[in-house]
Image (cartoon, rainbow, N blue to C red; front, side):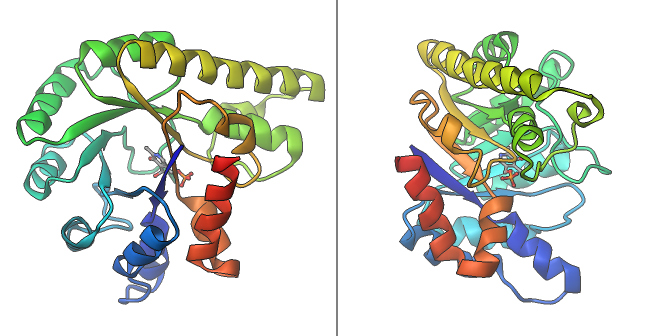
Length: 260
Ligand code: PXP
């Protein structure tokens, strides 16, 4: 089970003061030393954390593959094609959101997706689509000819948070519902089963499967044993823990949970 460490939040801290420290570039060696397999970054249109120069230097200097998350905006796709990361993960983006709140609307964005995927492929960049875990979405992703899908695990993380009182990471309508423990427990089981079945379906279609969003040291365990999920991309919880134990230890702790 591979771990991609999303290092955006190092740049969030830097941007809080608009100075040069901490520099996400300093994370590259530590992430590799701790045994993670990939660095993930998100070049947002509003550049609220990772900026163009970060992305350029990270892609140039990293010894690990770079998974660059990005929206479909023409300006961003131009930059991605120039920087040529190992993989581009296409995500929906809304300016006012705190974090990526859901997966892509594949049907609604189909024409633009066809164009962008074609451009990325002609620049030898493999493509992943960040999608909500439904069968229709994986079928559409397959039809679009991408190599990877990444399941948005925000709903799973939020059900877990409501059930066990640990912090959810993603704003979600589920918080507005009044649900009993029994209902939440059933929903959690359904969501894990859904991820298990769909990742198997996707693998059988020839897609590689990643998952991410809102995953942390508590909720990772119930889905870490889904063997058909090849990779988890985790950011917030690892960077938050690194404040207390350091980045290397925080990654080692997550790796240990994934291996188990
Ligand atoms: N995967 C994707 C596609 C994302 O957009 C994000 C958040 O930037 C993550 C994974 C990591 O989410 P988190 O920071 O909640 O672990």
